[in-house]
Image 1 (cartoon, helix red, strand yellow):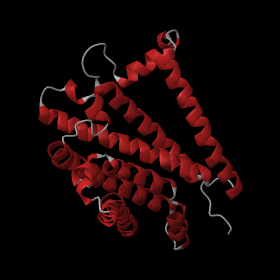
Image 2 (cartoon, helix red, strand yellow):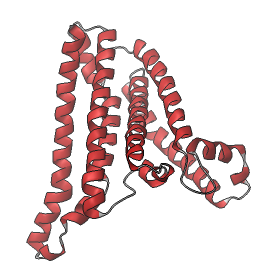
Image 3 (tube, one colour):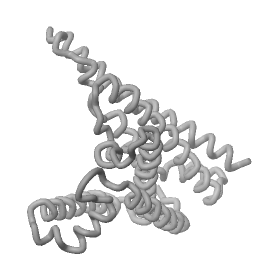
Image 4 (tube, one colour):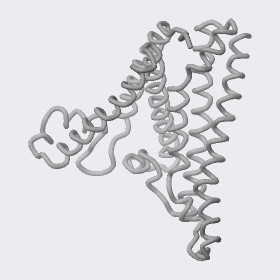
Length: 257
């Protein structure tokens, strides 16, 4: 019963935050450009379809899930101080993230299939639609796997956020800031170096790293990519991340302010 109450509390807080984010994005990407066009006298150049063409609405949910899963310490602190056990908080938080992913993923696909594709003729609306959808000849089957694939991406992104958030709480605020500054820089340099090698260096393209990446991505010389290696990989990664999260969570401590 206590787990249900904590779940309801966390869900209410985080679903409100989700609505607030969408309201902000709606104003920033749709209302403000209209107002600026109206003020500047260029209203004829304003196009609602063009403003909706981008995938910012669908991408925003993934960013939101990563953010709240990383910045969960305040909820942890409040509930632990009010007598909620670690296990109860962990179970409730994972349940809430699962519900939010189900809701957000459903909304994203609804927006893609009902708004982006028929109204603004956008087709490469996410990773699956760009690389994998043509693997399936049945549109309904493609839709189902789009939902599963996109959901797994959100799960992995959320679990990565949980790992980062719980890992950072093991350190002082100064060390946290250093990690937050240095890690993205190192990750960006590594990613850019690897990408440039894959694209420009013919010898690197034949290495085991490139071959492994092609295997995970489901690369095929002809036709659409195969989504199943990527989906299986995401399942394995999600399971590993969940184990890491549970371990880090067991070490999580309340900080002295």
